[in-house]
Each structure stands twice: as structure tokens, then as C-alpha cells.
Image (tube, rainbow, N blue to C red):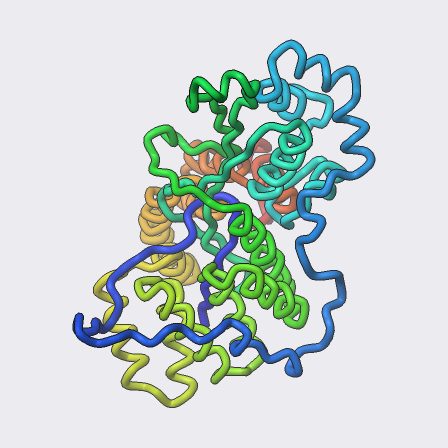
Length: 402
């Protein structure tokens, strides 16, 4: 069974498409039920960790010490608050921050660990900016869709960035509303200047953080923790549909199928064309014996989204298992074409090339897998495979590349 979840780290969150049915203009659509009616606290154990976002933007003592350090302040004096902040944090600065997508962290946790995913880095940068008095706005960047996976959980990720606005003196603001802005974009996609952006409120960022923590707990099979994080995401921002999807997936994992259906429907009430929710609702309806409706949604999805996430990849893996390496190579290549920044597709395309005796192409794809990797574990894996390839054919004797 495939379950689609949402994670805000890198690329876009969900495809939009027409719903199975439409209503006449004269029909009043009932208001969605309050979010609190969708919770079932008694079905879950208490969380094993504090759940919430009260300290999401809080600066730690170490962060305050760095902000007031001579090195930091010299950058601000030389380049202004906006550019000085970026220079101090990311341009060969003392922090040596790295991208790592395993966990979404608070501002203080990101600073302490020196690693973070896109959302974590946005939060930490915003925390510093706010302390400097620099106005911050957030943006959802509407880029092409890509997916990652953990077991049978498939994660669609949205790309966010932030804009720092020049903190102009009071007398200047009286005469002009135009102020210089600086966009900070981590893992900046190619040609992203041409992408449409959608403004986000801070509560959207908070809900994304909470939802990420829920999705990460799900990937680790910590179902009870996942529930409380997803519950908090929905409570904090009842308009954030991704939180409903994650909460419903939690119910589905716990075997609360009727509750899962109820929450998926609540999500569709708020965003009727969300194909991620529709995909997830199909097996839930089937499990509840609502076969006809399940099949209708499945048929509709086959029309509006005939090749869902990992469609070619899964077929490629089947071809690999059958020894059809040429067929697998073609299928993996199709996935790489539509998701060129996902490391696992490059890795398996490289394995298919190697099985076909094309060492040069295998090396190139494994290098791309390493370059696009977003976790330390996968980076180490791809580095090891590249080392095997560099050893030549004799080094691969008796060794498996997967």
C-alpha cells in the first residue's frame, strides 16, 4: 500500500487536479467541520517528547553570543543588516552550515547542529533577522513536483524561501514605501527567478514545521508521536490542508480507518482538487467496503494523473528483479527526467548502466546521486559505490552495488 505524505523541505507539495464530482451553482456547500471534531486523543499514548512550536524562533544563548560577536557585527557594519546577515551565516562563515533533510529543527537546534533542511535554515535565518530588526516575509516557490520515500511512505516536499526587507529609517519610510529586498533561497532551483511565488504567513511556517515533525515520526514508525505533532499542526492552522492529510495517514496507520476517511474528506472540503488526498482516500474507502466510490476516484485519478509519483521507478525496479536491465534503464531514465534532483533515481539508473556494462554512465549517475543526496546516510552509501566503481572491474568481482 502506498501512502502519500507531505514534507516541506525541497520541492513542491502536491499536484492539483479536478475532483471526481462538481456541484451545481445553486447548491450550498456545507462548511467544513471544526478541526477539533477530527481528533481522537484516547486512541494514542502521550507523546514521548514535547510537542509544539513555542520555541521555534527562539535564540539560544550561543546564538545571541554569535550575533554580538565581533565577526558577526563587522559583517553587518560593512554590508548592512541584510547582506551582513547572509555573509555571516552562509558565505564561508564560521558556522559552516550544511544541508541535511533527516529532521526539521528549531532555530536553536539548527544552529547547535550546524545542519538543517530548507525549512530549518529558513527558520534560523528568520530568527537572526528578527533579532536584528530586519523585516522577514516567507514565500512558497511554485516549482515542479518531486517525491522521496521511506518504506511505503511517499513524501512530497514544498520549497520555501524568505525575503529580508531593508529596515529603513523612519524619515525615509515617510517619503517612500519602496525598500530594498533580498531573497534567501536554500537549494535554489535552476531558473527559480522565473518561478511564481506565493506569500506565506508565519503561522504557515509554524504549521509546516509541526507537520514535518509528524511526517518524520511516521517514517520512524513512532505513530503516537506522529499523531500529536499532526494534531498540533491542524490545531495551529486549521486551513493548512497538508496537516489534515498527515493526520489522516496517522489514523490509517493505527487502523482507525473510519477516522482516516473523515479527515481525508475534511481535507477535500478545504481543497477539493488535492490529488495527494484523493490517492490516499482510495484504499481507505476500499477497506471500508465503499468499493464503488473507491473505484470512481481511482478511475478519475488515472485520467488526471496517469503517472503518479514513482510510477516509472517502481516499474523499473520490477524490471531489475526480472533481469531486464535495458528496460529498467529506460524506466529509470524517465523518472530522472521528471525528477532530476532526486538522488535515488540517479542511483538506480547508475546500477542499471553498470548491469549493462556501461561503467562510464554508471559512474556519472552515481556521482549525480551523491551530489543530490540530502542525508548523511545516503551520501555515505553513494560514496562507497563510487569507490567500488573507481577500483575497476576487478574491484567489483563478487560485490553487489545494491
